[in-house]
Amino acid sequence: MPVYNYKTNRSIYMNNLKKIGLTALAGSLVASSAYAGALSVSGSAGVKYQSKSGSTGSASVQGNPYSDSNGITFSGSGDLDNGMTVGYSYTMTDAAFSTSNVTLDMGDSGKLAFGHDSAHGGIDTVKDKMPTAGEEAWDDHGAGDSAGVVDIGADASLYYSVNLNGITASASYARVGAGTDSSVALVASELVDGATFGIGVGTDNTGTSGTENDLSTVFATYATGPMTIGVQLSEIDKTAADSDIDREAAAISFAVNENLSISYGLSNVEYEDSTKVDAESTGISASYTMGGITIGAVNNKTDSFGGSSGTDREFTEVSLSFAF
Image (tube, rainbow, N blue to C red; front, side, top):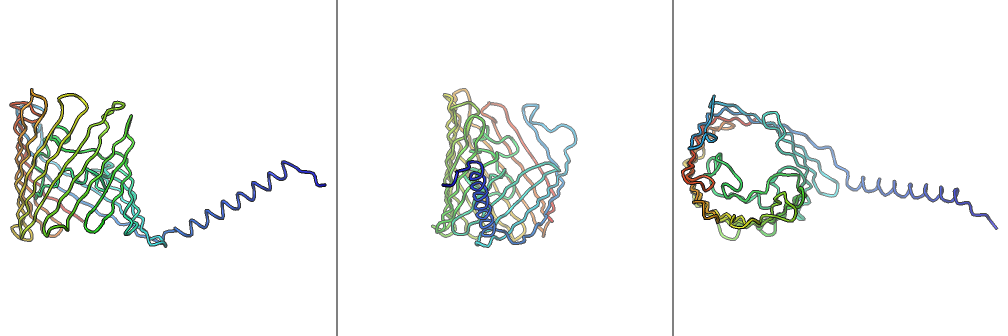
């Protein structure tokens, strides 16, 4: 009768197990290996004149109103032999990290993405869908809660999106501090000719364990000929008492010709806090494009910013930008 040797048999067993594991790994790599892809580089550069004024010192531009900016984006993709596509993008703005993402395009099954880039899914993709030739009416005065914008942010997040018969469904998820940020959005662009409808809901971690703000927004836009009009309603329901924020927005844009566009927008923010008054914003934008060159102009005004009576702000910008 043979004698069982624990060490010898265990060694044989482990070696066989390693062989099986390596064989399986090699098979999976062959099944999902990427063909040689391409890495491309694009960039932008611009010069701006900005003027800020307001009833508070922090709202005013101090010093030189002229500035320049530049951006570089590295992007690449490769096809897998199972028909899927892997993509990558990394953007720097003024030589500092801006956004990055890795995507897996699964065709009809949708697209998965991970990175610092909220454009891939969830409520941030529909936080403000009002037509504009430049900036939103509230922009450059302060975003987020102060402007009633349902913005979760661009923390490292997992995204998913899929198109189902003209309806795009997307979601975002991030583990942040003591809680999570999560959201979903639906956008329908083929139900009515020229019309687009959307809705988004989400929760935003406040940084305090067990407390999250509930966010929601709905919008509709309609394009006919050179004109596009839109309306949007947003709500931020906060955990703290008497701190909810509602926002109503409307805008219209007009394409004068294939190069020149102009727009006008309104944004009204209401605060549950009885000590605050409505914040009213108006904005005018224009842009003229010639190939890779764009000339833009923006003038935004906000009365009672943040709900503080008498705290008014105005922002003016003229810019020249190049894309290459």
